Image 1 (cartoon, helix red, strand yellow):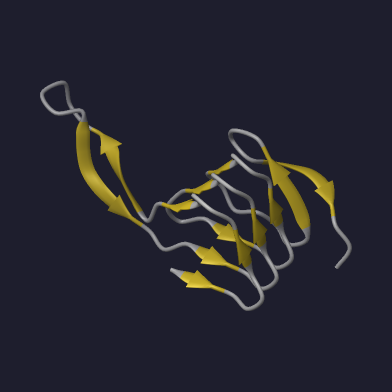
Image 2 (image 1 turned 45 degrees about the vertical axis):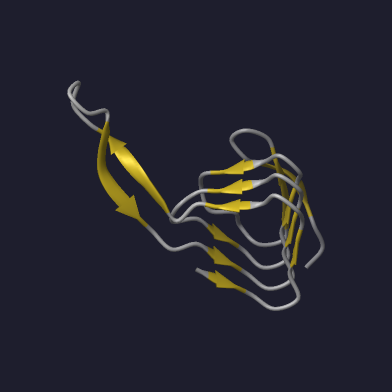
Length: 92
């Protein structure tokens, strides 16, 4: 996991670097999958947000409180929702 410079990370933010594939009926939690998370410079992540395995959050992003980030976030955007979606462009 990499966190860039000048980032603000609020309380109860979860960085999840591992999960499981869906397995067979005998054991639904299948093979473990691990993937790094990268947070760019100048990012602000709001309270209770969750960042899932393999995600890259680009420089200058804002992740709203309670957002679940499951895909990469392009730089200089505000992301909100479950799953996260870009809701606003921010000045670079």
